[in-house]
Image 1 (cartoon, rainbow, N blue to C red):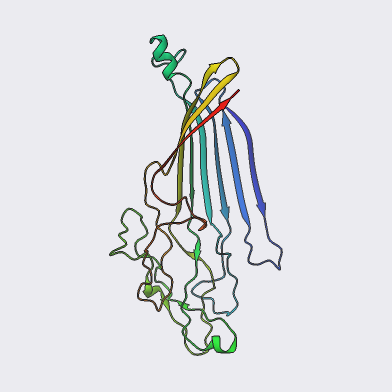
Image 2: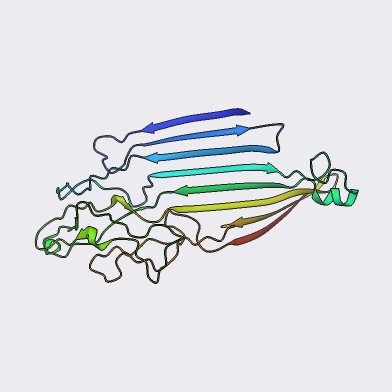
Length: 265
């Protein structure tokens, strides 16, 4: 086993760029030339996401995060030669026809998981807007902002993701103690899995057929979208949709299969 590269990066924003948090990352790649597992790559990225918005912050213009800031991202990818056919542990003494059919297949995989995107709680119900200022809500100390966070336990008909008791509206000319975007209130985790099964078929000496099947969300998991964050809305905390493209989370929809073929000559 050989470690090809390992790196740790850390950058910190300058003093005038308070909305860009520091981050650290590490990536490790392993290659085993004599193993069926051709290679694997694992990486993790974490972000310093303190937004300045907490239950004891009352400044009207406290720091906040970019809406796409992810606190933690982890990914793993690999390439694996299937153990079938000539020279492999399984079906290595089969007939020529069977050997031609089962040899040379490989499977590629990629798993990616990231913490949910930071949410914005719309809880301003006062008069600041009339004088040109934005108004935020308030956090209630000691009360969790979450109710049901496990996707397997979540039922959109009866469950709520966010807890309305953890927030209050701001009235009059009060600014509120919430930042515009909160690092400590996030949507569902983003989860993405992809698998590819394929092989190359030798048609002639200089002609090769590359064949593969891609499976996105192969386990057919439901990916819940972000909840309603309007505190004065009766639907606050509810989720009424699944994830869609451009949300910074995972690939949308159910299981998707794609068949690919390329003839090279």
